[in-house]
Image (cartoon, rainbow, N blue to C red; front, side):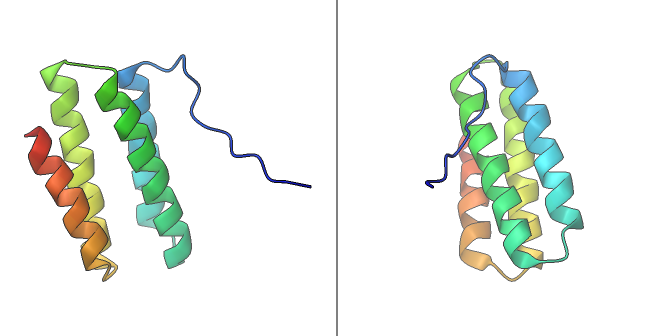
Length: 95
């Protein structure tokens, strides 16, 4: 049996995708296992990528940058420096 990956529903608005990314971030902060943290960070990133493509609203783009920055800080704390740097660069690119 093959695995099927379920992506984000296409009908979510940019704001809803940003909200979802924040949920992933909060759960990643609470995760005790590094692998779970990394999966949740990846899910947050996917949601943010879709949110960024779906809006030109500066307040939403600022919110996206804030979450990218928070993901970078979390990964710094978890000693995942290369991933942290990538998230910080994405945040800077929006700011």
